Length: 419
Image (cartoon, rainbow, N blue to C red; front, side):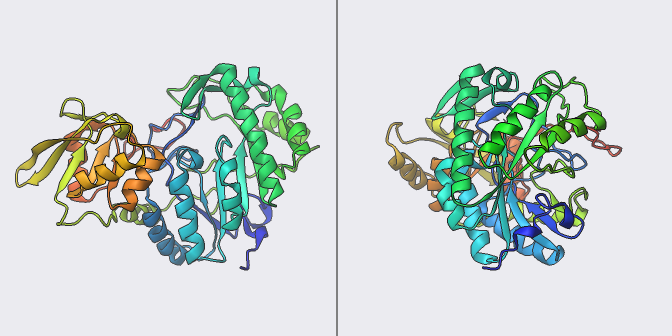
């Protein structure tokens, strides 16, 4: 391979005006709840992490990249940064990276994560020559960290407050050590919240420098509607520059961050073009299982009106078909019994082998991977079954979950999804 590590525009200020990046939104789920994050909004004029207009499967992502390397000839790096956390979606993340690496051996690959669950995949990342990793680390004091996170989900348990903060920090230290041991370049993103961790950044940066971090991006908190920090004071440029100047004593600072979306493409700071958005939407509609030999859609629902059951919680599935004047409930099928491990999902694939898609409100990475390999597509959404069926049968993308759309023609994408 001929990877030029200098050509990553987020890690090298000298190339940000000449080299483009592309983010693939293949990771919708997240394993922590940041108090500054709300991923319900979808506004194409808004640029911030956690926002994406579409979701892609690994195969769709490869198709999208193939289109964009032609449309964006200065594309030098492909990354995964959400809209959730890549390693809360490890199967989708690793399969996507493998597909891109096999097709584009000279392309830089990067991943941005909170660090909670990346450590088990470090060896595989290195084998795929993923060269750049970003870890978001906001505090090394559990008391401060607890003010920034509502909960942490680790090994199928939810940990609130300082308990979750301690687990997150321990995992982040393990991740940083493992990443540096295999020679990857690591950037630390630190969200700076006035009155919470702004006074703590100096200590944090000093500690992370001792653990081998290569570069740091101190990002002023972005007030987002519907979060505990929606009314937090914005840091003035001179304030965040003062924080960066102190941190620069230990780690080189990134000062050109564009708060990239999970589906960002182009130069840093460049708005997503209409052509890129259309190509993303077209790729999201490309689903091999949408064919006439699979006429039905299975739905996880409590009452038959809303998509409101997680795949693992569904003891039965409502089976719908497309009719001339709408949709018809064909039958209700009992799901395989719980507790069968991986075999449960293989049995479910057989049960629903005439269904092009399963609509559910959530799905675990392992069941999703097993069903995917057996040709079953899963779409995650929340809302009216009819809306989901209409999207499936018309070939329109489904957002996961269906996001509030409050934008009008005059939207400027100021800060809260509606301008």
